[in-house]
Structure formats: C-alpha cells, structure tokens
Image (cartoon, rainbow, N blue to C red; front, side):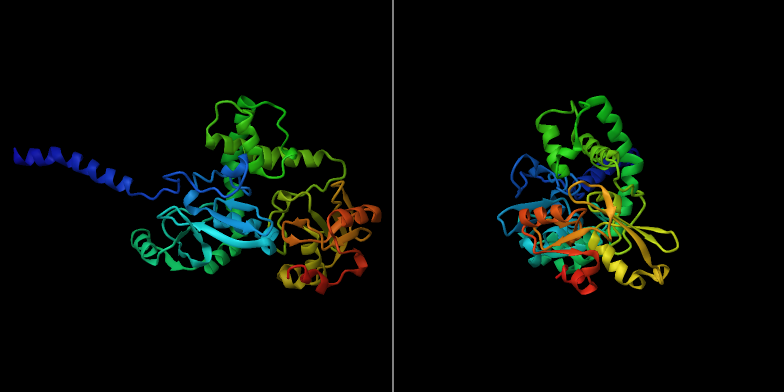
Length: 375
C-alpha cells in the first residue's frame, strides 16, 4: 500500500516539477508596461523587421539621435542593420536589462553571449544586464560567456550575412506563404506598401485603420512581411527599366542581399559576362577599384558595364554617364552614399534640396574619395 501511494504520487510530483521548470523559463516578452522611446503609432514595432517590441522587449535596443528623435529595435541585430544609416547621428545607445526590464546605457551593460536562450533575429543570443551578478546567475542556468557591448555588437555585425540568410529562408518557407494567404482572406486588397518608408509605419496604419480584420500580432507580422518583401518589390519591378535583382544575389563587398534595397541597387557586368550586384554605388566603387580585395574568386575581375539606379526615377541608367552627389543628408543602406542621377539638372536640384556638397562624374571619382565616405 505505501508503494502504491508513492506510485500514485509520482505523476503529481512530476507535474509539479515540470510546472516549476516551465514557470522559470526565460521569456523575452515584457512582464510589465514596456518603455518605448519612439513617438507615434509605429512605436510598438521594430523599424527594421517589424517585430513587436513588447514581444521581444528583453532583447530590445534603442538609440537617441542628434535631432532629438529616437529609434528602438527588437534586437542588437536590427540595430546593426540600421547602424550605417544612423552612426554619425547617435548620441546614446540603450538596451533593456533582461532582469529588471529597465533601459540602461549599452556601454555599461554586461552582455551574456551565446546562452541556450534563442537569439532574436540571430543564431547567437545576446542578453544585457546592468549588474554583473545578474549576468552570472543567468550564465549558471543558461550558459554562455559574459562580455561587453562592443564585443556583442561586433559579433552582431560580423554575423549579419549568415543571420540574414537564415531569416530569409524562414520567411520564404514559412512566414510569407502564411502572410499571403492571410492578406487575401482578411485584408482590404488595395494596401500599398510603397506608401510607407518603414515596415513599422505600415503595420501601425494597418492596425489603427483596421485594414485587416481579426488578426493577432503573429498574423499581422506575417501579412506585413508579405507586403513588404514581396508586394513592394513587385511594384518596383513593374516600373519600366528597373533593375531585376535575383533574390539570392549578395553584395560581394558587404554580404547584404541586394534585392532588399531596390532604390540603391547597382548591377555590374564583368568582362567574362558575369553579373554582380551591389546595394549601393559606394560598395560598387570599392569593388571596381580593387576587386582582388573581396575574395579569390574575384581576382582579375574587371567590370566593363555598370547600371545604377537613378534616385528620382528609380530606373536603371548607365553608371559611367551618371552624375553623383556626395555630402547630402540622404543615406543609403551602408551609410553615406554617392547618389546617382541621369541628368545634371536632377543632380543640381537634389544637391540644393538635400544639402549636398558636390557633384561628380564617374571619371572624377577615386578610391580615396569612396572610403572617405565611411569616416
């Protein structure tokens, strides 16, 4: 009889154990009202990937900019994606303390890198803590190594290419097909993603104006990714003369998928007929002046034909006859850019409107000038 009592108690004890274990599992979701530093209806979502900041609050990072505005991301990975666009304007970087859920200066944080907790938009997780003791406690339970912001951010930047590839595969096989079906079933058909500058702006409009009916956050994200990654790019291709960039084409200089940046795309044709794609004129010139630097397979490569994307018309134009504006307040995917125009008049108008410093022809551009844009 005592044995039977013990036997009957075993499932109960096991359930209790499992219940405690599950209760102690780490969640990235905010357990209280999250601190959101952006303004407007779009402040609830990451401006890079569109993910809910509340759902991924404990990996959230934010930046304060010189003009008084702020941006907040679901992860250090999305901060790394946007960093070239904002680097020179950042006054402060903050991160959410994974224990207290308060915003803290990123440079003072202790980062637990590579724990068993899944990463946000990356294979390698990175969690921040204000106190080293808290980071040590998490390390004992979840593993990983404790470091600082500089190390965590360098890892985030270095792994961008592989992380983007991982994310693209997941989106292509799982999320976007679901988003397409949901869009057709639950949304008004005339949502136009080209109207929006950022994916979180589009999500805010869809949510506020009920452009899709009876969808939860996960479904809304799938719809947004379908609209942003598929419908928006399809609209670009309908414009006559727009570069048709293959989805698997990566910039040989920075490793980014070029099709994601149709406004900046460049196509170069090598002397042996191979086509190369770049996510901006600056990276194209880095390759053009020194192709050997970017890998053995490019040694001896010579680009003989260049098509760049006119900033105003978004049409492909001859890069060697284009006019390029430098020093403007418009940045490309990799920061400061040489911005191309088919006509000198367009270049002059843009220079005046956007505080550019000078207009160059193709033959006037040199390698030093290109790398100076990164300073």
